[in-house]
Image (cartoon, rainbow, N blue to C red; front, side, top):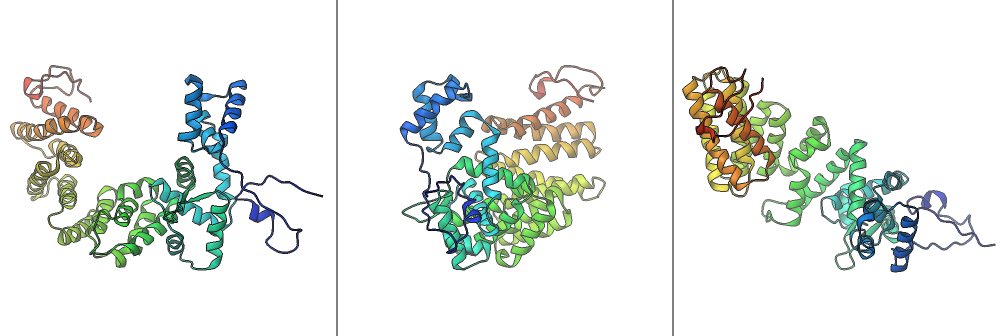
Length: 407
C-alpha cells in the first residue's frame, strides 16, 4: 500500500512524528510554478471569472505578473492578482501552525525581509537567544520546504517573497506581536554595531530602521517601546542615534523632562549632528508651547527658530522635516502666545517665507502643504478684522490666494 498526502509545509512536523514508529516515508516539496502551470491557472481564472486586476491585461501581461511580480509563487500570484483575503489567511495560518521556536524564527526572518534585510542562521540564533542544533534543524527544514529561501552565495535567509513578508508583518502587527520581534531584532543589531563602524554599513542601517521612534510608536504601545529602549541602554549608550530616537519618542507622546534628558545626551555626543539639532529645536518649541506664560518661552522660541532656519539652510533640500517642525510649532506659538497683531504678523511672515521655499523644494510633501495653508490663514487673520467669523480675500502679502476661514 502507498499513501500519498498533500500537507502544508508548516504543519508536517506536527502530523508526522520524527521517530521510528512509522513506515519509511519520502518528502517532496512542491516547486515553483512552471510556464505550463501559469498558463493552466490563467485559463481556470478566466473561465471562472476570477481574474481580478488581471482582467484588463493582455495574456502576456498576465503571465508576467505570475513570473516577475509573484516570482512564480502560487499564493503570492493569487494575492496580487485577485486580492483575495483567503490567500492571506492561509499565510496567517502558515505562521500560527508552526511550533513556538519555528514560529519565532519565521517571524524574525519575515520582519527583516519586510525591511529589505536578510539574516544568517547565526543572526537568528543570537536574536532568539538560543544556540543549539534544534534551532538549526528548524531553520534547515523551513528552507528545505520552501518556507524560507536561502541565497546560495551569501547563505542568508529571507521570506520566500516580499508579499509574504508584508502579509505576515501586518498580521504580527494586528495580533500585537511585533514588539517581541522588534525587541529581538533590535538586540541583534545592537550586537553588530560599534562606535568605530561606518554608519552606512548594513547593520547600522538595520539598527536605525528598527530603532526608529516613529516606527515604534506606529507598531507598538509606548510601554513596549520603553522596554526596548531600556533593555538596550547599556549596549547602545555610546550612540547618539540611540539617545536621539529615545528622546524623540518622549517628545512625541511621553514626558518632556525625559525628552530633554535624552536629547541633551544625544547633543553632548554629537553636537553638530543635523538630526539631533532639529529634534532639539523641536523640543525647545514644545517647551514654549506647553508653557507660553513662562518668562523664558519667547527665548526658547527664538532659539528654536534660529536652529531650524540653520538646518533648513544646511539640509533643507534633502530633508523636509525642519520645515515641518518650524511651520507646525510656529503656528501653535502664534496662536497661543498673546502676541500683538503686528508682532504676530511679522512672526508668521517669517515662517511663511521658509515654507514657501519648502513647498518649492518638496512639492509632493502633504504635511508642508497643509501647514502652509494654516500659516497663510493665520496671517490673513492679522489683516482682516473678524476674519475668523466671515470670509474674505487673502491680502497680497500672503500670496493673493483665497482661503475660507475655519471656526
